[in-house]
Amino acid sequence: MSTVRRKILIADDVEINRALLKNMFEDEFDIIEAEDGKQTIRLIDEHRQELSIVFLDLIMPKKTGLEVLLHMKKKELLSEIPVILITAEASNESDLKTYEIGAADIIYKPFSRRVVKRRAKNLIELYESKRSQRMICENALQVIERIKDAGEGMLPEDLMRDILKVESEIHEILN
Image (cartoon, rainbow, N blue to C red; front, side, top):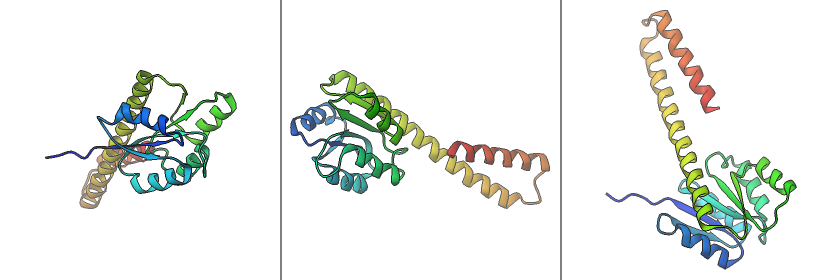
């Protein structure tokens, strides 16, 4: 049985920057590349289910990294796909704006291979854990609904209260 390899999107208008990142991750992931913001948005929309992470350059032609982030926020993708913004310019104002929109991290050029790999690995694991927890909660809600339907009027009141409490707590976790 073969497993489907997850994908990483590397969006940068400078080919050497894409090549550096590709070299770091191509042994473990399928790599998709974009050289401008419009192409990045198209690839995110096409591959959203398979993406483990997006490396996103701040300054790109056609659409900037911030415009791509805003697109992802509008489509509610930033809770599903971590984005590491890559930039050469460090400014508290742009960093704050980037984090407020929803970037998971910022890496400054030139970057350390080991630091980039560790940050990406941590974010991928965190987001995959969140995805897994969400699926478990959604499955639990389905089971609770079936229990409520099957036991309506037959379950003891205290058990029904406990079921409703657990259901409410799961909804809080999901929101």
